[in-house]
Length: 125
Image 1: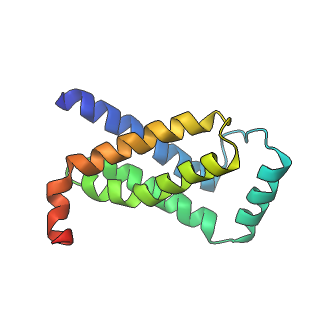
Image 2: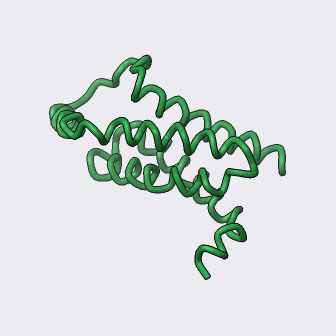
């Protein structure tokens, strides 16, 4: 089970590292967007600090998740981004192919949070 967990968490981390780096280097092709999505993307790009912040959080969180010693912190860093991704896909258009992937990633992120609960106890108590 430990090996399966490491593989799943590493793949999760690599997806976020890739997404974060893409926000800086734009090496992946953009998806086809509806006019509503284009309007939202335009609004996000007007906030010049938001895209780089998301890229930093995704890349840093992904790097932290790869290593078991820092995984608990990485799961916390990525969680707000993950919630935002799921809410974005849910409210924009549930038929978007990204929604099932976002839900699976949220489940994996939640798994990491539960798996590291003991490390969060000093913060909560």
